[in-house]
Amino acid sequence: MRIGLFAVGRLKAGPEKDLAARYFDRFAKTGPAIGMELARLSEVTESRASNGETRKREEASMLLKTLAEGSILVLLDERGKAMDSEAFAALLGNFRDQGKRDLTIAIGGPDGLDPSLYDKADATICLGKMTWPHQLVRILIAEQLYRAVTILSGHPYHRA
Image (cartoon, rainbow, N blue to C red):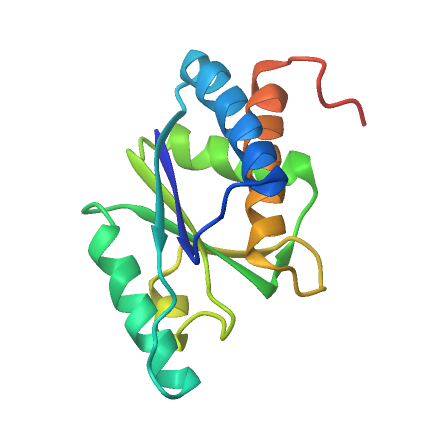
């Protein structure tokens, strides 16, 4: 299963980008052995529309253009379902085992995600009830993708 990340906002060079890249690299190296690969990281510039609702709508349009036909869509939202690392790994493993070919994880912009996306999403999860800047969310989701692969493969990285 090809897993991609869609993010509103671009990471500038620095420690956040380096750390996210480190975990994405680990995921890319370990995932193929269990049928998961890093497909792509799509970064789009935040919409410059004059109001939040229009910005969210434009950003949603950009996201939908990147989705492959039949792709699984997972939204990251503070109001989504809270799950531990093992449940997240199981979610990914279940999508893979159902024969799903593509999965996209979406990180919204400062205004959040457009309401229309929630109807299209296969899952909406949170990384905690707090609001996180997109730079940290990238690091968190990159690490959790790597952790999920290690959980599914029985690697000792995850020691709970």
